[in-house]
Image (cartoon, helix red, strand yellow):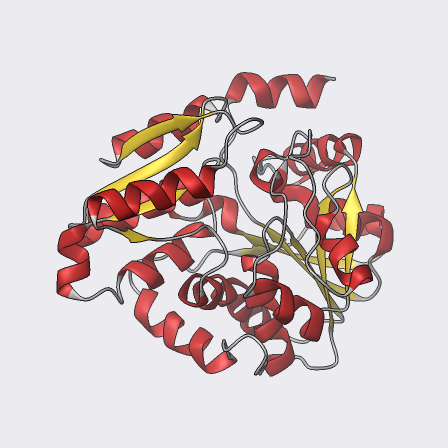
Length: 318
């Protein structure tokens, strides 16, 4: 529990019941070759095989399913580089809610296409010169819709925590868990599950080397904002942790690590060759750090698999 952020493991348990039958219980897979490379026993939680291709559907559906009938009629607005966009669009379509998503013009084409195919309206912006949160907030106020942010929302955090809840239930006792870190929804929710189910285990967030705002924030003891980082991990091009996620990470996580773009491409290649898994750059952040630092029995969340095939091929061949 973390009284500082107002989200508890009980909220994760409630979310697990709410999303049951809608969200996949994704498999936990192992690979002897990856174990040999890491010098540890790795348990990979395959959220790349999740509905909409990433863990984000967990938090999105949990949040939208709790809206009142009046709020559902008013519709929702979200902002995202891709995975939260698809998740909100899918959850909205399942619940019969109108969705508008603010997405950067340079979003991967597959993520943009999927968001539209789920029935959402897409509003574009330039991620390096415009404020996506401000655009989304203005749209929500103009339309009377509910804003569903990608990470800094109690119901989103609780939903994301269900992935590691399942990982711990399926893999048994773990010594550490490594998860990707962008805005902190996955890490903060995961930390709630680890502290409740495996309190002696370590829990680490891993962010891009070029976007280490999380690590800086923990060092400073307050939220640090950085410019939009340039990294192949497009799902982690966030500039700051959130007011809900930061205190949970500060109080419950054991640290924040980083991985370079080269390490991300290497991890993608290792998964493709040894586990036959297609995972996007952001999705391998946890694995990239685990390959360097893991000891004992270690859980790794592969957070998503939404990557354009031509880009995927380039990253693997470089």
